[in-house]
Image 1 (tube, rainbow, N blue to C red):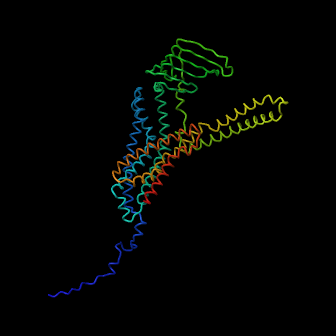
Image 2: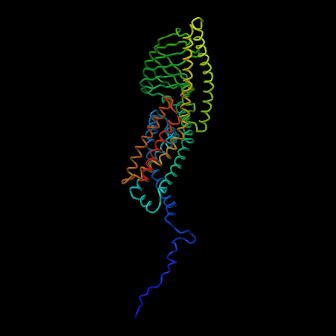
Image 3: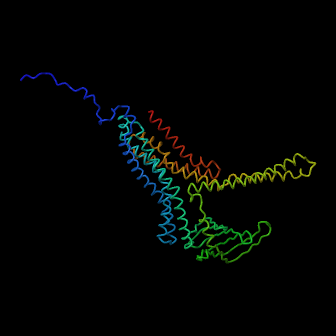
Length: 451
């Protein structure tokens, strides 16, 4: 049978219809570039959170073994009940969580983005019309979530855990005073300072005690050997052998007494030897309470400075008048006295302005924010470094994460030390590591996107 060579006509209008759901706008390359794939978003979120969980366990156990287990071993060696040691470890966990989360965020993001880059998955996303936003948005979302979680642990759980830790430790200390015996250390119990040499069990060699008597005399006691005796509710008793004692008055320096003794029993009341851990420090406060305490201390500092400024002005006027009147006036002979007094008052002003306690409170306040939000500052750095990875992305990410974590921690401790010793800005002392990480990350991101 003869068959015609004509082909049936195609429905060109049907071919021109977009392949999309009814009622949806036609797809285009521009829409693909502007859109965000929620499937990829959830995929990256899950992958980053999984890597974060693995990294968090790594840092958690590293800090846990380094701090808590060593502490627990020392306490157990003093025959403290096991359940009390377990409670101490539990109350100390928030500090480990607060330290581990930012570093785990860095390493987790590095491992995830490095794996995607080395497996060319990022290249496939870009070739599909997606932008780098599909990588940055999930990483930023996870960084914000971890920063908030770390902030809660650092601002709420950490102070509560530290307070409970202190209360339990005081109860343990009352029952086991030997916990405070550390060789070659200095302990302060109320108004008493104890300097200990080598310690063996309850015996101490080369003991030095500095205290103040009830009538205000300063006293120094040196003993060749001492033995700690637990007196229960009475406190601590130190049996001293081969003792040399010196007591003196502060006002009359030449009025002093000294004595030798073969044996002396020295008492430390219970309320004194637990006083060192009774007070709540800046670490045990929330950010709100700490800010309120800083405002109180600043007001007190200003009040004391106003008084000192008045004294400085008075001494400066006295010195100026003595110089203006010249040698004919009797005040001329007191010019050196006025000058020395002016210098003393100026030094007192500098001491008040650089008050160590207020500086520590300000550093701790900034640290409560800088350390948790370090996870967010790590996002751009970890994503940029991960995008540069070509092979073995997870291994390289793990190694880089460890290296950057060490550098960040060293910068944080260095900033805190410099801030305390030299009085540098508490804000920059604590936020400089975050600023450096964020700045380097942004630069690397710009370089990688333009490449």
